[in-house]
Length: 329
Image 1: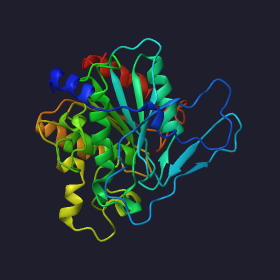
Image 2: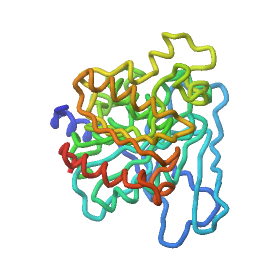
Image 3: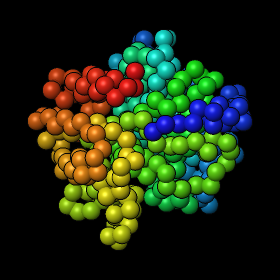
C-alpha cells in the first residue's frame, strides 16, 4: 500500500493531541519485577470518548494471575476508554507495530502477549503500540465490529502522528494473538470497511497494515473449527451463517490484504491449527504473500515467554527476519 504522505502530514497538523489528557495504561497493584517498567505514554483513541456507548459503561478491572513475585501475568476487562500503550526504542528504525493481545474477547492479556513483546520490539528499533480494545460482550453499539473499530482507529492515529514522531506512516505492522489474532486478521482483511463515523482528520488515512502477523489466531466463526468461546462473545451462540461468514477473516481475504506471517502449533488444544490453515489457503488463493510456521509442540497462548523451551519459542526471530524481508526495517 502506498500512503499519501502529504495527507499524513496534513492529518498530523490537523489532529489535536493533548498528551496531558491521556488515560493511564492498565497496571494493577502488584509491583513489577526489577528492571521492567510499564509504559509511561498512552494514546486515547477517541477524543470525545468511544462511540456507541452502552447504557451502563463497563468498569475497567485489572487481574493479576501470577503468584510468582518475579513474573506478572495481568489481564484487563471492561475497557471503556480504548487506548494504546506506547513503547519507544532508544534508536528508532522508523517502523512501528500495533499489537492486539488475546483473551477470548472476554479479557485482554497485558504481559506475555502485549508488554513483553512490545519491550522486545522496541529493543529491535520498532515503536510498539499495545492496543486495549473494547470487548464485544460489553454492549457497545458496534457489536461484533467494536474491536475492529478500535484497531482501525489505532492504525489511523499511528499514521496521523507519524510525522511528528519521526516514523514512516507507511511501515505500520499489526501483530495479534488468539482472539487478538482474529482482530489482527480482521483488520488485515476488512481495513477499508466503514465501522464508525469519522471524528477528525486522522480518519482520512488508511487502516491497512503494511504486514500482518496473526499468531495462533482465531479465524473461523463456524463449528467445528471455531474457538467457541470467542465465537460466543463476538457473534453469539445463535449466529446465522451470514454473520459467521462476515466475521471469519479467511472468507474476507482480497488482493488488498497485506502480506501475512502465520504461526500455530499442531498441539494447540484451544484454537485448532485448522484456523491458520484456512487463512493460509485463502491468502494463497488470492495471491497474497504468506509465510507459515507450524510447530509440533507449543500449545496455545505462549506469547513470547511460555514456549521458550520449545521450538515454537523461535517465532519472534522468524517474524523479525520475515518482516525485514518485506521492507519493514
